[in-house]
Image (cartoon, rainbow, N blue to C red):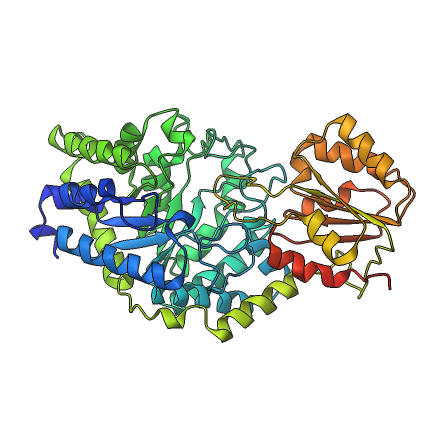
Length: 506
């Protein structure tokens, strides 16, 4: 469909991507499609159970949205791999970005992205909200961490670039995120309004450098984040609502002509500080093309009506709306087609590749062929499974301590996210007669209780090993440690790979 043939209602509906809470389109969502012409979708873990189910779901979405709007939808998903994965278990899921880059295997990273892209398209998903191009420049960042390809612009540019090439090899739309860089924050924009205090010179040479490089290399879409960056926007508006950032910097200075999308406007950084409807209008005025309202149908309905009102009152120009719709339709023309060959997702070759890649990402801090012998009566202390950020899926069920106990005997303790002094003293007493101590922590570098636990346990005069269940920043926190290992993701598959570095006492 051509822009000149579209009604105002059709144009407004194209500007939104919306989600729903179950494995089939809800009545509320379908009302958005039929009454408000909403033309795009975002899927999460709660929408997905298997390859076949996803394929049937996306066929329905394509049919119903195409019928109501006259245009095929963008069906999007956050499939970064590792800690942020929405794919069903009968598909090949890749490791986290940090783990992938740690192998140094650029072409393997490219192939991994191509496989993910091929799987998504085979199931009717044509838009992957990846890769993360944030630099992991702040170890206290609760949101980015192992989702980033590295601590330097050069690492992120190299390996993020390989991921983009892989997605494009598969013919799938992808989006670099979170422009202009979410790495140097201490807040999660799902929960607060983060501020990046770096000066413009540092931002241009660090945070913005991977985006600038990959834009020149053909990056097709960019996701703008909700952080405040005073060096770029003196009015201290979130970047999503800033014309200086979106149009002035990204469109004009960096000459990006692809699709610009928002991070979800239901995140607290927008919802709590500005409101979703006002945030939507301001984001479109700033130059965002596609607005994500990922969970609540009523919020999406109010936002659509707010856009229509802003157009009618002249706050939003038709020129701006047509420009946004033109970018959306161009992305759909280039990347929108899907084949629905779910047999091409989760193939034996793909699954074997993902398993082998994961295994290569998990290796001791000093990879000298070292193994750790727990002895005859080890003590395993491990953090309970949990979501360290809202963007992560909480699908992990088996805890580290009991997983290791099942394989090596001894005693297992599941510690809380923030162990108390009393709990730690109990752990010390129970470790006194053990052959060894093996700890597993979940972002302990951000948790005072876990840090204190490791500090006290470090004084024990028994053989010790430490496993960072997510972020390797935890590895230096247990003193006197003979063996250190990072998993990058707290999953059964990662623990299965890790146990090969422990030698049972026969």
